[in-house]
Length: 282
Picture: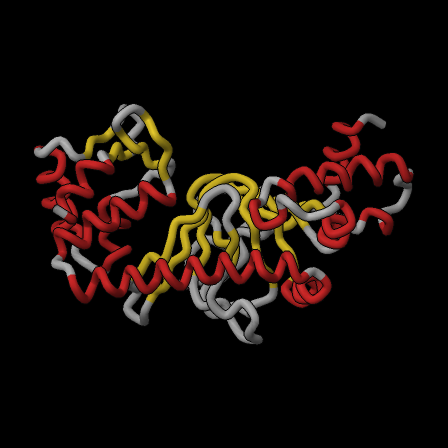
């Protein structure tokens, strides 16, 4: 059996309904979400050669995650044994706020929006995550529930690892622990910067600072511009800083007239990072 036929057959044998659509119903929605289980030695009629090929396939995906990039083959083997690959369609939920916190996810490809909602349904976007990033961050080592929703924006391939199993791997790998703490530290600094922006800056300045943050986390250099790699609506920008959509629209219009931002033919924002820095800091 060829590698492609083998993997396709294994995928078709492990189809799960992972995505959920509609935060109020909290019902499982049948979407084409695929789970690739890595405990291949327990699958019937799989040769050692095929098992090795599938393990190599998973290792390649784990190595693409910055957190795992420098791990040894031995350390990667321990992760392969507990990892699953899941594919989610847009507008499906990986998990919802209040669900039991059971797994940690690493993004192989795609875009995932992390946000909280209050009792009235008002949305507060925490972050927009893309390839190489992990989630959740808050409550990672606590026994509890997911603190926010994780909704897929663009079709995403995720590596899912049960938290209990991941903790065992961390205890055996001090180097991986240190890397994880660095990631957590970066998130704490980011949250501190956001709090400072809300306390010390007016709404116009907060929107400029938000655009600058997105150029660092969700953009690629394109000439004088930084092109955002995720589609972001004015409402989503407003939900990131807790202001009104109309306020964001007016501010973006001002910035566009000044030549500091633009939109390309595909609807992605183009941002003049240097120009915005002068606008806010000089």
